[in-house]
Amino acid sequence: MKCADLEDLICEYVDGALAAADRAEIERHLAGCENCAAMARDAADAVEFIHRADAVEPPQELISQILFDTPWHKQRTGWWAKLAHPLLQPRFAMSMALTVLTIGMIMPKMRQFQPADLSPIAVWTGMEGHVERIWERTEKLYDNLKFVYQIRATLREWQQESAVGSRTEKSPTEQGRVPGPDAPAGKP
Image 1 (spheres, rainbow, N blue to C red):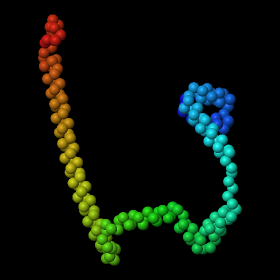
Image 2: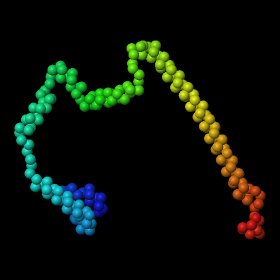
Image 3: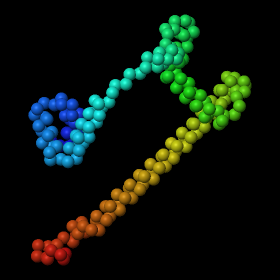
Image 4: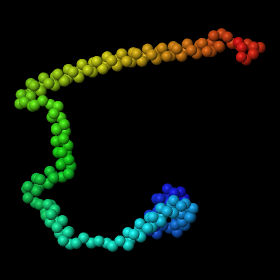
């Protein structure tokens, strides 16, 4: 048995919920491994301490006071309760808080809103300017990408040409200097 296996079974061992064969294997491991034996003693001491501790019952007045102070301790059936209940859910409260935070972060970057800003003509003109800028940026990016790809292709061609050229310089068979059968191995 490995130490990791013992760690998985230590709770069942301390509680006495293991089969006899598993228990014997764990005890053999504990006899040979001091670290695991210390861990088993600590776990047994913790369980013994928990069993010795008295069960504490809360006073009845505390329970009554908690129930009385809880705002939703009664069944609410009025129209106001039906309307307010979804608004008091944590997910709604968090979404509202994030909305307020987002607006708070965006507003300092915006100029003051005017009623004229909401007219359809002003909205259309503003959007048209944004669309034109986006189109120009896209065209520029496309032209730059073509240029980058052309540079990469040229560099790749040059690398292939230099690789072919260096291979021809190093290879004696391609240069016509093949050693004959009588020549020594080191000289052409």
